Length: 430
Ligand code: GDP
Ligand code: IMO
Ligand code: MG
Picture 1: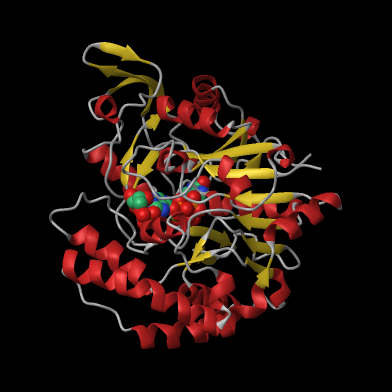
Picture 2: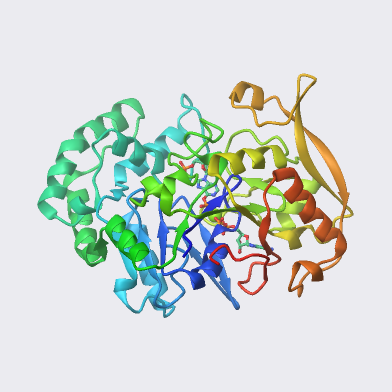
């Protein structure tokens, strides 16, 4: 038996959804443990593309239970749309396949309004958030004034809680951010209807998962965002508001750390980032443009162009450590097919000093310049490769170099967006 945690090893959008979809075959339960619909996880099966924001990426597999753990923040409107979209395509035939933990915090209209108003305010620092209300919802969770799924499904409780918090939110929205106050009765009516619609999905993640483990089943934990967007370990303040690293899998589900056996970090063969914040290997030239074009680097949630750059081993070593990673899944190798030479950043230069470790101090990080090693590209189409050995020798050398500079073995190699464009080197479940 093996329970496996999937985490983003960079700044998100590494291909976590694709890998979770592939690994679902070996698991009984797939559980999201943090984040919300700031995530956009893309699955491509045959010619059909599905983008999931909240529902775990195991949902295309009939009979696999998909759980939204307590650490997630949930926008009920988006969740209902996602359920309906999946049903229309013929998935989620059995509602018992989907479970929402009662302690999940709900994203309310004032959270979205505050997020958007802050981001457009000239006096506030712009983070480049997804505008989905993620930060304000986590603030209320920690401030102990959140509305949880258990409240959403009880009309009286919901009304009481909205009445309690809304005056403060409206005061802040109107008087400080210069926004429009929200209508109490309209919120209560709309959200009561969502609660009634979603009640049937209520469950207790910790109890369900621990029972499943007791019965000898495998659990797959699906992280959202990436290690460098972690609220504690990321490039603060340019981060998201949850624990994206593997520790979040415990607190966000109620499963103890002794039951986590493998931590697989998903990493592109290069780097992308959406939103503001430091990115030492970012390319502002035609090479960055070429990567964006070849990799179709536009956000799955907001459609924003992703910033692109060379593989950053310094940042990745940080992610290996903060997650306790046991393996890497390297995605988007095919995007590098045409390149004559490929660069890997192995250290940073800071005011003439060579740094091999990712600096904890933001003031240092923002001045770091990448130090590169250059490798020859394979300049071959790698579609059709079925094993590590059938990849071009120079692609093998690139992968071996990534393993050496990160200190982590590559257990999966992705050579295209489709489920079948994948090389599994070592299965973490066996
Ligand atoms: P996630 O948020 O980590 O699940 O990643 P996203 O879905 O936001 O972004 C990854 C994008 O890359 C999606 O459009 C995937 O379909 C695509 N993708 C995943 N793996 C590969 C790959 O190996 N090659 C190519 N070309 N595209 C890939
Ligand atoms: P997946 O799961 C990439 C980024 C935003 C912004 C910062 C904070 O698809 O990899 P937030 O709305 O969370 O308060 O925004 O985090 N961000 C992501 N970037 N992939 C994601 O998710 C992201 N979720 C949030 O762009 O910089
Ligand atoms: Mg994404």
